[in-house]
Image 1 (cartoon, rainbow, N blue to C red):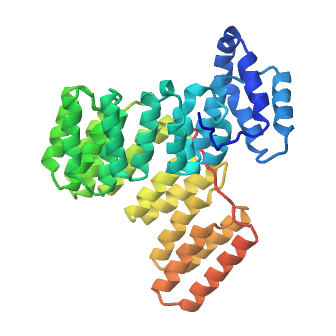
Image 2: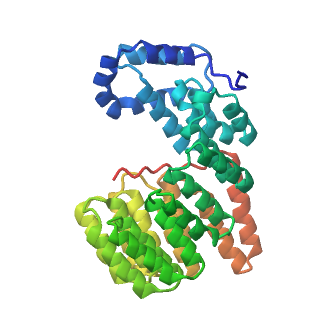
Image 3: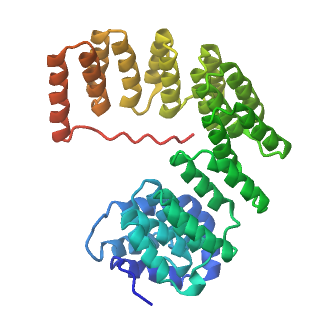
Length: 421
């Protein structure tokens, strides 16, 4: 078998040794604790970056001295976290020393870091038993992500011969590819083929087919699919939110509001992400009173909303041009915020500038700087756009130079606001 061109960093020997020495009983006992405690170790290893050999081993030793043991469960969580933040190269370095059952993960990471050809080479060099449903599916997903239609379809035929094409994800990937390529008419055909093959659609499938019909201005078919989901008990809050989004996009605002009322009936009382969706969608439908009503419902469940919640609400008020509401909401956030977030300030700055209230916008920028929350590139873009639209080229150039100077000095601060709700 050909050797993979990927090389694991030397410190993975220590990682792998710890994975193989723990007994099954020990792993089971540790699982519950690791569920809550793996992130501290993730942070320790992440900050090491390209540390020399021995640094990670020392970190792992220290971790074990504190009473913890690393397992395959932790390793895969680490890789998933890195993939989530698109740190594919780091994820690949760690992933190359995972047990052989994780070939599909490696194929995905190799395609993102080294390209499709390297992923194909890795797949080709796998032993036949490893060329299974998962690895075929991973390569197929790479083709779809890379918009390689011919290769995807050719591989799909091979998968059908091996009876590897019975998973809904395969069809979802290909339908998504057709959507990206603008080949909308192929999506319903594939949807019917999928059902004829007794592959049950999931919520993602339904969203794709609904969007394809909406993109072809076939609202009747969108509603027919929704009724099909309802008859099968497959509709949920996200279904109706997606339907409302499609209605809003088509300018059918009354129908959008009816869909949102249905979403409220089936949403979980503690599902804060649904509240944020409702606020955004009611704003898109132009209904300020409903936006404020849902915001009050959210605050009744969360006395101190997160920055992300305020960000969604401020954006909704900006879209509806409710300047008084914007000021009130901004003051409310500022009075109780723990982390001063420039993104929220930018929304108000943009609203002021659209109304020609430049002095007010400048005061907000100065206040943010005084709070230690340096203006980011978007702040300057707002001012630059304003001055360009008003043909004040000298001022636009001044802000452009100022932004460039601050970037070079490294004074721009990366905002990382995690929604812990």
